[in-house]
Length: 103
Image (cartoon, rainbow, N blue to C red; front, side):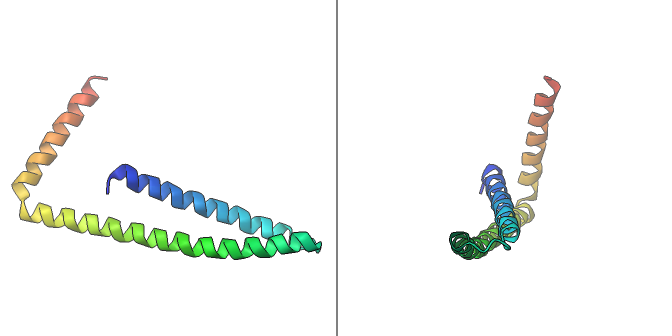
């Protein structure tokens, strides 16, 4: 999984958490309103919020698991091919240095 994909997923999870927090706050703020339609909407919103919370938790768990897998695979590769890893790191550092020096 690429870093941009990981960053996108992390941003999505953070955005969902923000929306959920806002929805929960809306539920708390309208708790004293006893009108029938608002009560029905609050009930449905509460059900949806709990459902989405569970899904976001599952997504977050999957992201964490995939990240751990990638880190483990990288660690194994570096241990199995130490000189290639050093060469790749040196090449990447050289390229980054060249790009930074152009500014």
